[in-house]
Image (cartoon, rainbow, N blue to C red; front, side):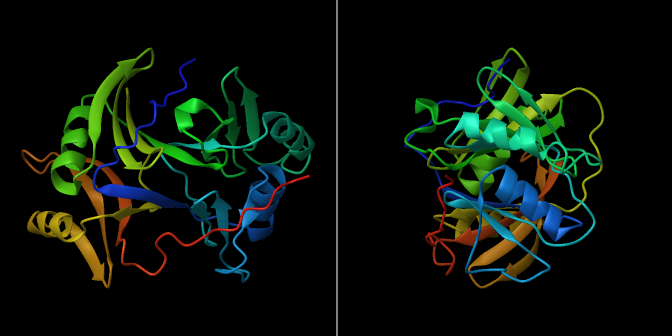
Length: 270
């Protein structure tokens, strides 16, 4: 099986960091048991410490897990975790805890595929030179997109966001890969057939230059929220004709945002 991730590079382009993936969860207790006890990640001790939202630290990135009807990312998230053997031990123990949910895991030589209790897919790797010196982190988010859209999606990120992108092909087909930080990528994997409906989940990245992309996206009518140091859009379009290619809300922040480069606490499991 392909590992579906490209070698890292120090050249990141205008997108300098992927901070979080946000999906709603119906039950905070089950989410804590999965993300903290089973995956071995850390609940942020400083932000969202109440009963209706939870931020989960993954190195310098996060999952944001507000309460609500379950949301499922159309694709999967690639994580780097420090100890495969301990992860597998915790996953095995968790089978009984999540018996009546979508929880599952499958081992591969290069990674472990894990499905959350609500159907989100995670691909868990051990530390590797392909991820630089990262031993714990969010390496990539891979999105399932329609056949024929990888090239114009790469054009969108290059021309409108200033990202470093290319389109490549492997044993599983064509995909666009866009750098969204040091050792971090967005991957847009072409798939045959229709996609599930978009349910409102989102991703958040930081831009070195936010003004240029904001002006370009506003000119196309794509921006629907602008606040200090931040804006949002959700439609990825073909730069040639503005045809919508894929929908995923982007929370775009500048490096002047007070949350940029905040030190995140990550505990070490025994």
